[in-house]
Length: 59
Figure 1 (cartoon, rainbow, N blue to C red):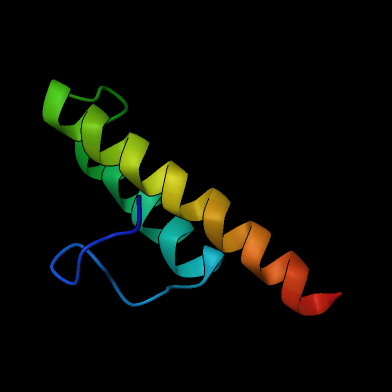
Figure 2 (tube, rainbow, N blue to C red):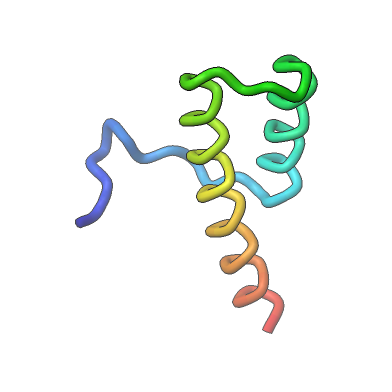
């Protein structure tokens, strides 16, 4: 299922997403709440997609 226009976000680089992941962990002090865990999982998925995209672009 493709994302709807409301859920589509601009594609960010893996470095940008990784920075957000690091910032989330720093703010959380190493212990994620349930909401932060959901945010983390979303960010990790976005990071993996960005990595795949960057590898394909480099090839």
